[in-house]
Amino acid sequence: MRKENSSNAINKEFLHRSCKVNEAMDLISGRWKALIIIFIGEKTNRFSLLKAVLGNISDQTLGRQLKELENAKLITKTIIPGIPVRVDYELTEKGKLLLPILDALEEWSIT
Image 1 (cartoon, rainbow, N blue to C red):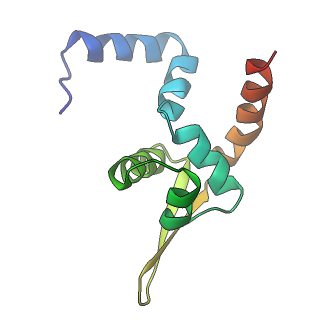
Image 2 (image 1 turned 90 degrees about the horizontal axis):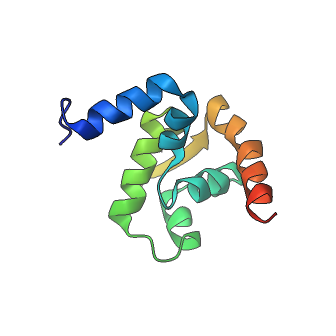
């Protein structure tokens, strides 16, 4: 539940208007989002596969992070009918543009 008039919401809106870097960082912030984007980019694109490579992430957290990335239009979700139903995730064009940025951030972090 988000309060539109809370000081946190007001500050967030101000920061997003003032500097688009803040808005971009909000889209990919979260403990798991960068790794999820990287793994989906490497074709680890199903919930069960992501769960396996991410180790101790809970189903609830993975589901929430995937939903947030989908809402941010960084990934798409495709439901493939069958038994069992399969769900594949893919990076959008905007999501693909993040891969070299994440690589650069990794390089920056080790310097």
